[in-house]
Length: 427
Image (cartoon, rainbow, N blue to C red; front, side):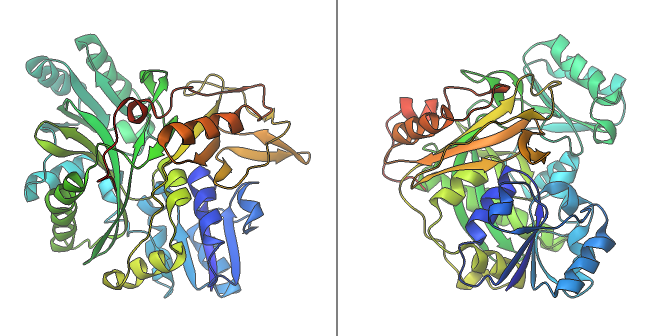
């Protein structure tokens, strides 16, 4: 098969690394890719925001299958444009991608189909949002409705913090994403990430993971796009997975089809496991970042046929096999992230990874032939092990051999899993 991968981050490097292992692959391209992805695919300088240019490239190279990695092209309708040319595409339509593109849309689907989630209200102006917050009290959660690269959510523990979050949204801190605001109830529990392929009618559960969103150790400080992750998430027992499928995934799949927007792609359900069971925090319509990195490390099956079956509507004929060994990834970020940071700082050298280890490129580029850090989250240092503690030790030993002066990382990724006794019913 001739395959085109869309995207340039750590998630896409992990997908490229896994897809390239498929015996079905004959030609592999990535647009725009990054220096890490270049180890596995031919990079093509196509502007992925120019849907006509992507379509023209696919026609020129007789591409058989397109895998769209990031959310922005999906929300913008890239999958629709390519399908109009008869291409097979992994990723939802723009209408179905509203599950990530609009927090309010997702909340409305939850309300209509009885999917457990926090109580909420939608607002298009600051005074009404603030009045609702004062009435509800804190803690409370304020979200920019649209895509804000993981930064449009404030879990406010004080009234001042909540009111300031509303001002941030309506005063343009998140651009057009903050034109509408969702204010929702604070859910108390343990977060988990759940992934499930869906072809519109059939769903295939994948793996669970736990992300570390906050920038500081002990899960403190501001939210980021993710500072590390591990898989599986011990809190997601077999019973909890079964409940998630029955109470959250299946009603969503049914609801999207009934709404005229059948969902084809990957459901990434951000969950809070509360005293009542699993509750939906939000949906994403692509693989998690950095959760994808640990999932690909654990996946034993060929990824390409799984994604192809999702796109072709034959997911009921597929199964996925996973390694029992946990995997853990640590994000190396540019100093200053998630606020302002210096770009194009030199990465002098990366360590050679052994078996069950990989350094994924998330925000790198080449400047005068030398590797530089171009993003906030730059490297995902990943390892597997017999236990989460062993995977953590291996990942940090690898990380400590990275030569990059402007990088920083949390040193406590996986702390929850390491502190608890893990059962044998993990997924």
